[in-house]
Amino acid sequence: MAPASEIEHPDIDDVDLSSVLLALADPHRRQVILELARDPKTERQCSTFVLPIAKSTKTHHWRVLRESGLVYQRAVGNGLYIQLRDEDLRRRFPGLLDTIAALED
Amino acid sequence: MAPASEIEHPDIDDVDLSSVLLALADPHRRQVILELARDPKTERQCSTFVLPIAKSTKTHHWRVLRESGLVYQRAVGNGLYIQLRDEDLRRRFPGLLDTIAALED
DNA sequence: TCTAAGGTATGATGACTATCGAACCTTGTC
DNA sequence: GACAAGGTTCGATAGTCATCATACCTTAGA
Image (tube, rainbow over all chains, first blue to last red; front, side):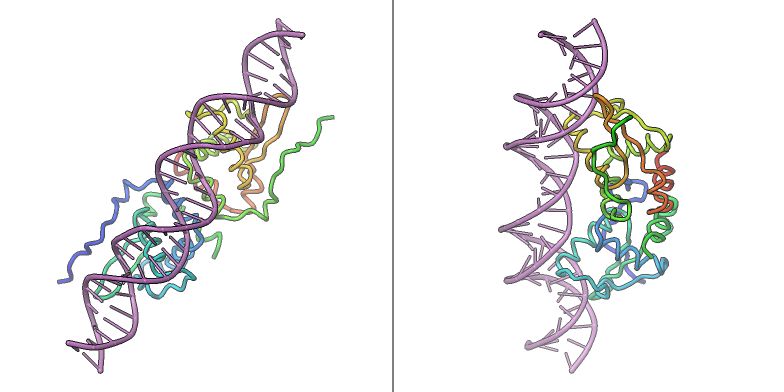
């Protein structure tokens, strides 16, 4: 039986729009969200994202994305997996993801 | 003949999504945009916005909104008028305004 | 001409942000 | 056990942000 993730995630109802917009305002974070949005149901390994930033900076962006409620993260063995909180976001902020994705895809 | 506004506004094609999202991430600014969006074609006097902040802070927010391309401002006599850049925004960022407005209206 | 109202300009402040490198921890693999 | 890879933690830094009070400017009206 796989252990539950020890990583903390906010309840989607506690997430506020300001934090989400702030998270999406950063180009690197928005790129991650857009790549995830092309395959909304699929987990992806964090190490596969190509971004021109240090890995400690990546850690920072993962945290911002996670705490803003945009992504779900799961630790597996040595690595981290990341996934869009697709259903949660559609329920909490209907249309937002689709709109953002349509603007840059 | 009324003089052309001397206030500078960015070309809508020079506006980038990060700046718009950053502008919308602030609750006070988002409140202004939402109030304007209820009457998108209508100018409104800046002094009629009720916000719990100092007037110098209001000036700051007007500038952020203007430079991010969200609003158009016009000086008339002693006062300032503000208006949503509705058509520009619909063309540049289709769906964005409607989505944001629907989330909090 | 005096005055009140709408706005701007100018610092200043405290908080937060993105970024980095270096050190460290953990996990999987020889 | 040794080692590499994936991530985190920990300062540190430089920049930006929202906020304020004060002083000032401009316009309209008495």
